[in-house]
Length: 342
Image 1 (spheres, rainbow, N blue to C red):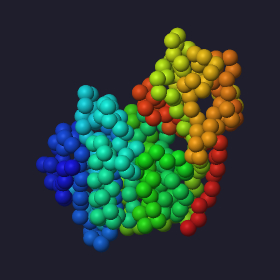
Image 2 (tube, rainbow, N blue to C red):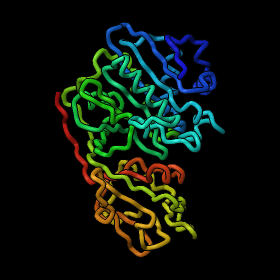
Image 3 (cartoon, rainbow, N blue to C red):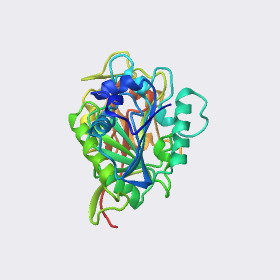
């Protein structure tokens, strides 16, 4: 992994895209802070098609500012981002999703990169780590954590007020969160949405320049979603996104399904058209315990897959490759507004 220590303007390139080309491979960046006894961690571009964090980081580095404490930063998916047209590929073709590699075994290339990131975080002992992402479909900003605590919520509040608390375990970086070092995933919004770049920029500045980021502002209101499930497509499923059923598909999803991101949908909301009434042939909905909850949350009317109960949907993708390699959407039954107190 390439390493840049207190990088100069010449090492950064004039644009984020030029910067990526100069890097050419996964990179660690270290910037000394005004206070040398503390370090904060940052990971961005774990997925090659999610550029908002990279753009914010590059903009900040070009300004030549010093953070309030040391910054340890990683940019892993450089090769995937550079392949073909920029930011087209989530992962390098044929390789594992980098954000599924942060626990052993570390045998393949993305696993070895993840292992090096873990080892360097252990070496530098940051007080917190942010992992900045975009969603593939249109979406407002939100964050994901693996358990509730004030430090997690304080970090989230630097960027947004929507918080997903998940007990699903997939091998993601945020699953390495601990009381000593909280790790938070920030989803800035859709990769094609200009507003997502601004969310990343404003939040990153707060993270790098506020002396205290682990104490939640008193009276801060958070919109909380607990225990989501993933609607996954079984390998081999033929999926399409269109205005109506596409002949020959196992599942056709409405092309604008992502309009429901972080909206409450009522029972009977259309999720897609099935090529067969046997949804279990192409769909899987398991909770964190591995229990099949699909029949409780979704039902079939004719050839239509619809919601069986009111649900909060988020991280809806409209890309067939991501729907197949990751999931179509997340769903939560719970919707709460809470005043989180310090």
